[in-house]
Image (cartoon, rainbow, N blue to C red; front, side, top):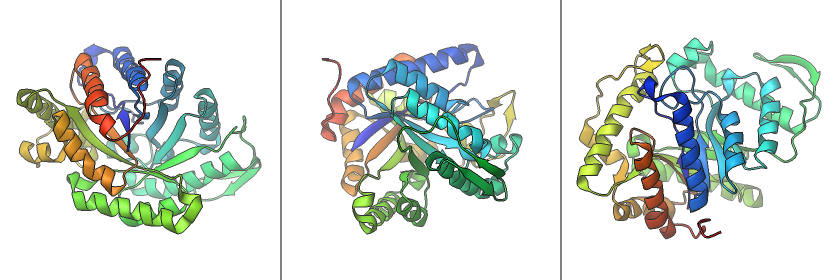
Length: 344
């Protein structure tokens, strides 16, 4: 099982500065590359102060310029917010500029506030996403493409530059039947279990595995990535601090994900949560190194190919870098033989 660090910006204080937020994320990516992590992951979100990255392809190129081996996943870009006729060219350029280290994770959007303000409300985003994905695939694989659909109508055109290699696409999907269908279509999968539910995770992996088996050799390269909030702690006191930080983070996340979407001047208002802090603690991977090994082992045994670790939810930069170090040194060797680059 491989590991990715999710570079999910958390920006509760505007005084910190967006330049410092992204400099921190770049430093985390460079460290992850040096310590042998397989990938880093980038979100796309607009107009809000968590998961704040309106330009993931641009940041992917910057990361590639400062690293040597690490893959760069978009996790995920929101296709309905883009015009595929221009976005396909941006993707082709990003793949070229990253030297083929880009994996394009795609999704329909999840935050009603964001999607409403940008003119693609959630009640239409699924339909627009489906057509956008079909258009994007056609533009990336065929030279002359015309379209006559609901959201796209255009005469024959060719995106330039042409892709120099097939672009790997990863689909964000949670329900097992959807995972099975998307795997059969040739997509990598990114998912997450509902509320940390173990059976849900097993069902998700089984759907992916069965689809790959049905595909034979054509499906062997397809991967399933699973995203979880995680942090390595040195003591029970630190664990409690991290859980409280996660509670504060989710009081904002829930507001825009399942709540009313109250945002003032770009800052998401923290709201009381229905889930207790103890229930939250049970669903997150915030623990000692040995506990982390024990908790991750069922994922590896089930067949998860890549764990995407969201560690950016309130710790300082030095604490975050220490967590990445400790995970690489004390946890990762139990699951992968990927070598650190520190000695090179």
